[in-house]
Image (cartoon, rainbow, N blue to C red; front, side, top):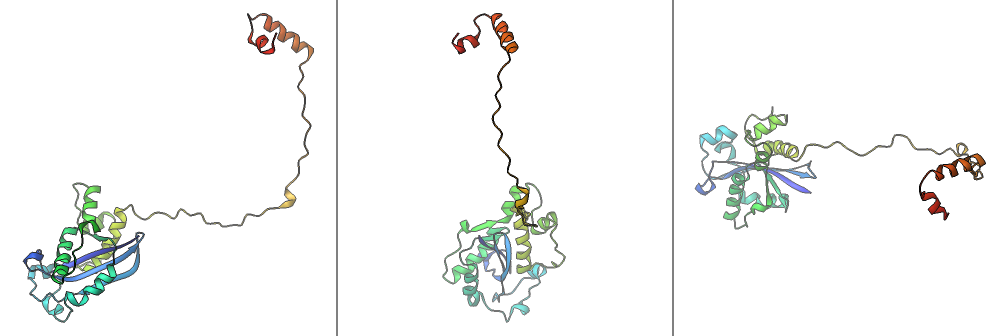
Length: 228
């Protein structure tokens, strides 16, 4: 099963208020194992980036000035994700921005049914606990030492590990490896001689003792079965 773990960085919190995507990171996983294939791109948002947002992700307008706009990369992005389910933490946020960008270019928005929200999964599994990406990484002992600021590709990689844990964690390989070939030694196989059946005939004393025992019983079932 192919899935794409996705994360975005943006200029702000509200795509309906003109905020734009400035970075997308995507990680391909197949059968819950990262394949090493990724999508990563920065975008020129064609607007100023508030200082509060820069403090979160460190992406300045100067850095993004020579980057492509979303329209120049959208085909590559859609080709990468294809029809795979999208795994996103706090999916309504990222999906709102993605669908806003797609709608500006005349593309159909992604349906909610296509998304797996890891924040929802975490809240179901750990109700009442902190379920941010940082908190989940700490809970699952996932190394975040390289995460100084938010970054879409780095966060997508971390989220892929979190998603794996939320799905049950890595399973041990249950396959049995053969370490030694089984050998047959014909000389060790011996043919056993058939024994003749042995008759177990009661002695005269046993017959007399049995008759006396039956005589002490009223209408014994043995006599009915033997036709006596």
